[in-house]
Length: 192
Image 1 (cartoon, rainbow, N blue to C red):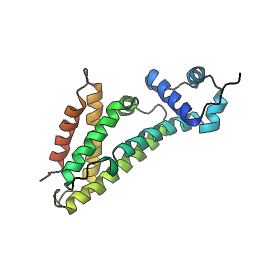
Image 2 (tube, helix red, strand yellow):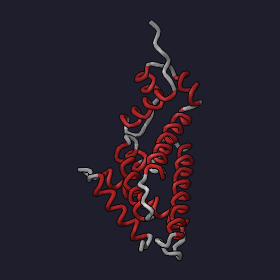
Image 3 (tube, rainbow, N blue to C red):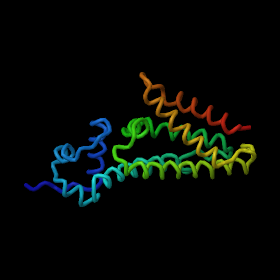
């Protein structure tokens, strides 16, 4: 009986699992053994090993964007209440995603991914800056804060704060971590 072809998402899932299992490295030979397919199938779907890794990074960051999107947040008109909920979603995604520890605590397994990662971080920072501008419009954030610098600061702080919490043994509770990081964010933004 012929084996059904493995699809793109199945390959992504298997590669992500292999990356986690191997502590941040991805050997195509181990992946082909795990999935029972040839490297040709990987190249067919992703073009190269870097293409496969970039697809894994894309999947991670697209999931992060979906999990912190406005439609996932309460309809509270107060900027701070909504952003506190967004911070919790941001932390929860990282606490629940199997790759988060590796992405936040190790360098990318291939230099080609550094550019991909930098682009996603820049996009997150720009979205945070736009959001901070909305908070300034409502009067909840002082106008003298530069939103671009503040957005980069908030995203960098969240990423490094979550990385530190993911390294802790035992890992702190999700709600305690989200509260701790929100308090630091609120202080940095001088929320009124």
